[in-house]
Length: 206
Image (cartoon, rainbow, N blue to C red; front, side, top):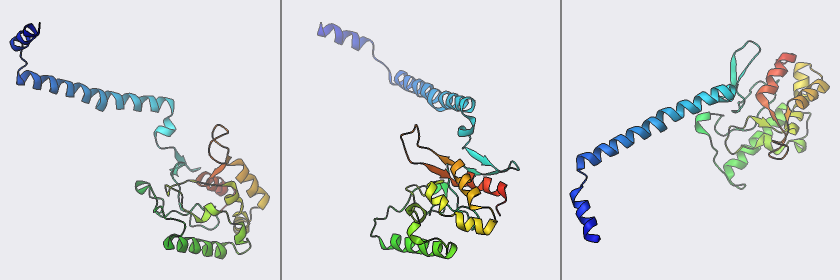
């Protein structure tokens, strides 16, 4: 039996050229399937089922101009607008990440002190003891577009004084933009700063 197998194998050898042809043919098939058909199919399905997300969850203002993405945070320099979290990468999407400093790292401590001093200057009527920690700390990605509802509300006195919009209106605005936990279980209540500021501008913010 063993000799018969050896005899069959010896009489049906696969030449190097035939083997190479098989490899090339399989490679071409997988390149077409995985590099062309699958990406086109998944892109097409995404455009049909969730076009907004497929195109980057872009956000437009009242004039129809794209002003950002609801997934990527921004730094708002105007003190009459709600401010985002600290970002050690200046919200550059291509540089996602942070320095991963430990709690005793001197650079992180100095950055936090600087953020607190900036807060005291911009919000003299709000005690530092009420300042939520997320407003002076960096998120893991450095791109977080959200702040907590408490971090939004603690900014209301400053924004009300600068815009003339009542604190009650601003509090209602924050409430209307507060997103609940995903599926009621995951994450924390949060406010998208870009969307919040766009509606603030509609209310008469500066």
